[in-house]
Image 1 (spheres, rainbow, N blue to C red):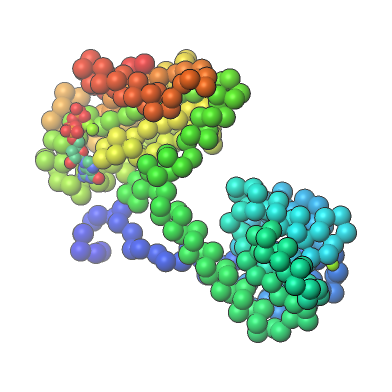
Image 2 (cartoon, protein in one colour; image 1 turned 90 degrees about the vertical axis):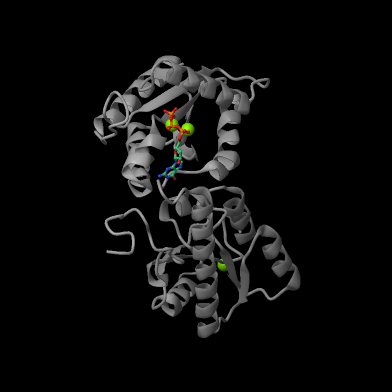
Length: 315
Ligand code: GH3
Ligand code: MG
Ligand code: MG
Ligand code: MG
């Protein structure tokens, strides 16, 4: 038990997500003996996986989720430069560092590797300790960067995405709906009478309640493309691409019911338990539609839900 007693949502800050030995290096080389040499050098410090097929490396990495790619320069099918460019162009593989390992010592080859997005370049024959240390340093840097990214975009109390995430990611999802001419739903959610909950039960219970409500709301969403985030204090925003009015309305109802069924006592309001109010808007956006305008409309609907007596969705 820590200074905060029973309060369990607080987590010690972590500066590394996993140990180096739990990380994975993918070795891509058309020459089996090169693969074996590199894997043998690295086997004590990191998990290794070899591939001699450079053709579908983006798909391979999406599946295998390596923390570093060791890439040969000259391979039949697709050369290392093309593979590296493709990895860097894909948003889900761009953060995997690529180390080129090649027999070519030509300066122009090295230039091409850096331009393609390489993190490092090692000329064969490799020195075992140099390879191990470079891999170790690069993977540790990646882990720190992954952690920083995670901490930048997540709210630590609820584990939900935050406003930075909203600004960075939601506009692209919205634009995709505009291009595809499909619906886009926005919900704004606010916990009812939360100030008095804090006043009665204390801020630690308030935090606990926020985390429980956030988790209940998140669990109501079924599709990975639906995004929920903590918009501010006790307010949440939900973005629902390709969802019709009926679907958003049903979800709104389910969310209100789910939070009420948590049965978190709040003696200050009529229902006796914590509830939420929710405003939503569903639009088939075009190039004139503004995302901020939709958020504002959902916020106005939320205000109406409050005015209409709370514990309900209005849209
Ligand atoms: P309404 O039903 O109209 O929404 O009333 P309300 O009391 O919920 O609204 P108000 O905006 O007045 O109060 C929001 C409260 O949320 C005030 C603030 O102290 C509390 N709050 C915001 N962020 C946090 C947090 O991280 N932890 C805790 N415990 N409380 C928070
Ligand atoms: Mg080769
Ligand atoms: Mg509020
Ligand atoms: Mg409130």
